Image (cartoon, rainbow, N blue to C red; front, side):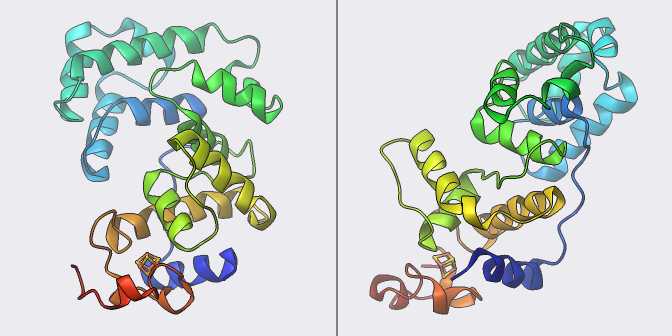
Length: 232
Ligand code: SF4
């Protein structure tokens, strides 16, 4: 199955994904840090609280009282809220230390260097860096979160490696020749694959009987999955 066909089916199933929250790289970093392990609706609420109560610039975050930042990261979930408030501050400091042109200029460096710049920010691993590069319109590739990576593997585009990083890189290499032509389409691919991994192609008990990709999916059409009742 070609990736374009997969994405066409997923778009027909889920509709056009919403626009990313921002195309500004610093704001995209804040989006990652403001919440943890919560639904996107709650992440959005925490991000909007950050925008309205404090502001989304490095200077505004460095000026904010620590208690105000903590109240916002608590809106984004109870896990590591104090640490995430601290990460917002450290990210603001790092962003201010960027050279002329700031973070956006740094993302115009060759992709391996741009990834290294982003990886200095807390909570931004390689998949997160790739997502920021694409949403900020600085690179053309297909970012994958854990949901999207699982979908890509089950569809047979790539196999698992020994660790997550190896699996991620293997999937990137496998998809390289099928990357959509525009960065907007790359961002859409990320969102559609993620949504499919969350909704139907779940980690445990994937709902293959409802999946439009099943006939071309080596996992979903395998004997083990075919004999499985929906949701089991
Ligand atoms: S058929 Fe099943 S395993 Fe394959 S993509 Fe669909 S939900 Fe995932």
